[in-house]
Length: 532
Image (cartoon, rainbow, N blue to C red; front, side, top):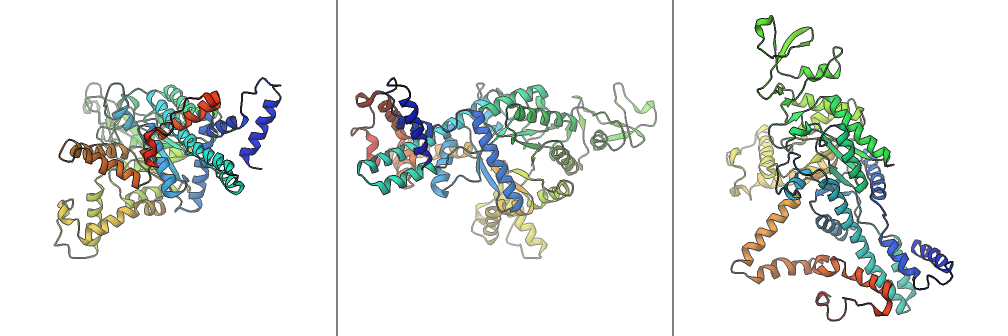
């Protein structure tokens, strides 16, 4: 017996037990609504998606070719259309997630208007976007199931039992659009209690995975900008603990924490941790500071701090704003220490924010981390802040130069130029870009590849193209040829925007509630019928 039929039988029994009071209730209508609303709460979603993510992590440990991917989404509709497209083109959502970017919330979702990525936006907008994304994904489930239910009704009406059984099998094996979201909590929006409270709201909205970075929360900067200030390890671990407590309190025992380190590009710290013995974490953190030796009180200015490092008194360099500076050659050392400590204190995955997409650089750090934590895995930002074309053309140039090839036809500094687009070097660089994710997952421990803000750029690009044509000579043809005709020929569900927004779901509900007297929108005069 199918799952759908089993649920229907149980509802039939329930309605019969009401001794006529529920005779207006059609059990099959309720069974369909239940199927369309598989996830009752955000915590149901968080538990389900956490199990999916844990399964995927185990599969990656066995086979690094089984890496996962996501794209950043700033609106529920964007996330919905992404998952619909994935199912259409690839047949399954397996291994495909959504990424919720703090950068895009700041730039696109704040009541203050566009903001830089500095945690100035309303922190409540983070769980609000998680809830919005899952609302749209659940609606995508309901829409597809509505179509299947109508297919089932048609097969039954025609007396075609074979077709009806086939549709029932599709209903029972329906793959949900609900997938894991990796959600950016920035640096926690305050102290560890503030981080805990926000993490709870995010998990209650459906988040199974929270990404937390080791910057100072009130001085947070975008990972690809200057001026980043990191916190000592014990401060970061306290916030990891806060997120884990939130997961466990809410019964999401498989919740995933991504510990992000910005140390590679961060040259500053706000405070000096207290070292209790040589070699402890605080000592290691302080050893990365830029310091000068102190021989006497004459070497000190008013208000200077002094620390004892390896038996010597030293003065850390303190800037006019009170921040302390790290030595410029310590970035990778600090990254490795950050990552090992985070994994040993409750984090599940790592995020190393780099300044360029270079597999050798990433692998060099991951190899050192894995020497201590063998199953260490990365979430890696395939960032639009990188100039991918120039970076990879220069990487190929450098490789070929080391091999002694003749490069006289190329100017390394000008490789972004369109004059090189048809060159052998450009073609090779494009192959490296195409293979970057699979190569990085195999060679550098990257479990999950994401692009933080691609849909920011796609929205801008498509709007630019439409505006150029529509307000120019092409006029209406710009929309018809550039948008609608493409939607039709690509088989995109969005061309039937009324159906996409739920009109057919609403029609079915009206019929459930009002029977033959329902006023429905999907009749013969609905212009959506022009699209077949």
